[in-house]
Image 1 (spheres, rainbow, N blue to C red):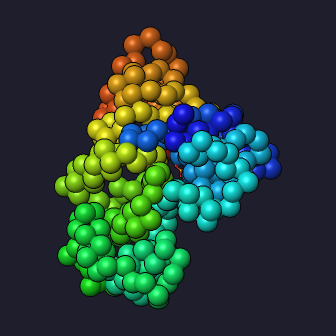
Image 2 (cartoon, rainbow, N blue to C red):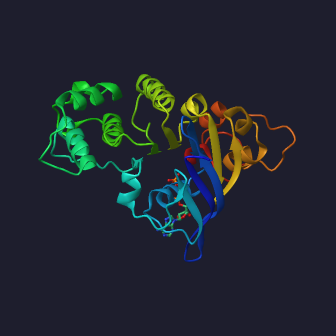
Length: 270
Ligand SMILES: Nc1ncnc2c1ncn2[C@@H]1O[C@H](COP(=O)(O)OP(=O)(O)OP(=O)(O)O)[C@@H](O)[C@H]1O
């Protein structure tokens, strides 16, 4: 039994099919990537999983039970935590207080039993933002704010982390450290499901990758298999000739609008 099972999910917005019979899983102890070109349906899938979007059809099971009828906050209580592309921290609070509040919310006893300061500081240390503890959240760099979001998620000690573009705003060194952190979190037995456009990071840290295109899962497997998959290459680059396309994902990540590729989508959209 997988920690998370997305089973034949369809989401329609009027005439737009954002997710088209998508089925995939995320396992405990593994980092799973959900990738695809812009508009492929990744965020909509995240919304369905976390309970923000009701699927038109299909099921989501978490930890062995259907959560289709489970509201967002109950899914969170059962062990799902999510970060957003848009940053959600309280801007006027310090970084430390943002994490303290996240602990409080998880315990549901705000103001009565304070989390040990050591726990808050240990979490800041763990995600690499202890130096910013006393800064207001609205004054820190975007990459640091993303790590703060992660710390706030970890305050709930989740079984499953849903991370939406977590590395955007991180520099190369921070991204490397972040990749190691993701591996550590998986090694603790947590499941990590990540929507991410940084292909080098995805290739380096994911155990399994699911690729969406026009709402459909077009490939699933370990990084090497996904990298070699012609449908994936077509989805990203628009190749129509399957004969001799053998690109690495680094190539995919590096491709830019000036490249002479018969593309329906360009690197700018990766
Ligand atoms: N609330 C909505 N109403 C109508 N159409 C929507 C809505 N949300 C998403 N869509 C459409 O559904 C499709 C999938 O969008 P989604 O945001 O899930 O893709 P994505 O893969 O996350 O894209 P990106 O990488 O750009 O964030 C797109 O065509 C988008 O325009």
